[in-house]
Amino acid sequence: MSAKLAIHGGEKAIGTRLPSYLESAGRTFGGEEEALVLEALHSGCLTRNGGKMVPRLEAEFAERLGVKHAAACSSGTASVHLAIAALDPAPGDEIIVPPITDIGSIAPILWQNAVPVFADLDPVTITLDPADVERRITPKTRAIVAVHLAGQPCALDELSAIARRHNLVLIEDCSQAYWAEYKGKLVGTIGDMACFSLQQSKHITCGEGGLFVTNNDEWARRATLFADKAWPRDTKTLGSCRFLFLAQNYRMSELEGAVALAQLRKLPAPVVKRRALAARLDAAIKDLASVSAPAVPSNTKHSYWLYMLRVHHDAARATARQFGDALVAEGVPAWVEYIIDPLYLSPVFTGPNTYAASGYPFSAYGSQKFEHGLCPVAERVLHEVIAILWNENYTEAQVDQIATAIHKVAAHFAGN
Ligand SMILES: *Cc1c(COP(=O)(O)O)cnc(C)c1O
Image (spheres, rainbow, N blue to C red):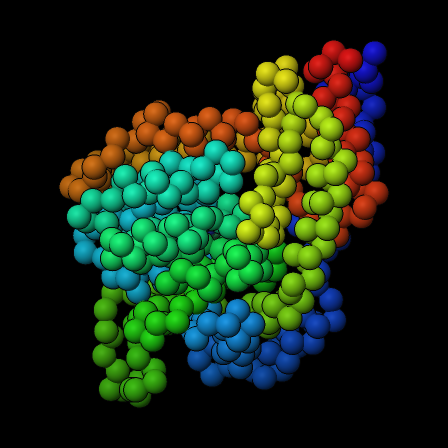
């Protein structure tokens, strides 16, 4: 007879709250951040044009990653916008995206009047399926946004080959994948451009912020200008300045830059710890038939922004939703099914909800119908996963408690 589930009024498997990214127990802030923030404050200049922290952050980030250029900006979404703006698509150009990601991977495409085209996912890694990407290419396709979901690198060799074959730009969205590796290389160094988020929940953070990287001089210049109103500060005085193209103010402040710089210097420790803790949970649940650990291809190293627990409905005798709700009640911090629907079923796409009733840009250029069945694999796998929030500050004992909770819920549904 299995123990009474917490969701049915039983005792919770995890009695104390685990560290959360929303509080200091679940973050890595310390004296290093404090010193740099005070240095910025005492300098009297809190904007990057005149300050030192953001330029230092850009230089060190590029150096640590081994790329030529980095441009800081105000969010991960903004960093994707820098990439799209650097690419400079014409209205109606198409950019291939995955349907399971943060909306920040996609919204910037629409702001540049291009259209996202959704491609389906590999059911094992939950990242873009290269074969399906290739099927969705048209004469209007300009780029692919490859999202390393949860910290699992995409099939980058295959995607790079497709991009080369069709003359497309490969943009890596590494917001969830700091220091993840593909064939021994850091993600963000393989595509033509890459984007990172420094938002509160990510491996390193300054609350809100983003970083764009590339080896291409032209794109770097255009991205840097795009974050600063296309104001060419390197060549003009204010009095003689002419604004070069339509752009944003996405500047990162010096206070954010100071925190981000201290956080960057702490890598890769948070990633290394997350990996070790994930390996511990993998081992603790490997004998269960009802669930499995994230399957990580042997040529990649996952960075575990999330631990994507897979629920096998038949063996579990429960859906991921039922299993996940029970786990959350036991005290496991998780987003059941990660996001509610593939993004193409969100009102932003099924609208019209923007630019009045025009339906723009889809009404003018859209080729896909945003409805159930567009990406069947994504629709299936989304309902097979529980995204357990992962954190470098979990103790081994806490990971063991998560394992205990999973065993308890599995035993309940199996009727043992
Ligand atoms: C977090 C995230 C973003 C957006 O980052 P913000 O800083 O929240 O704007 C974009 N893409 C992915 C994959 C993300 O996880």
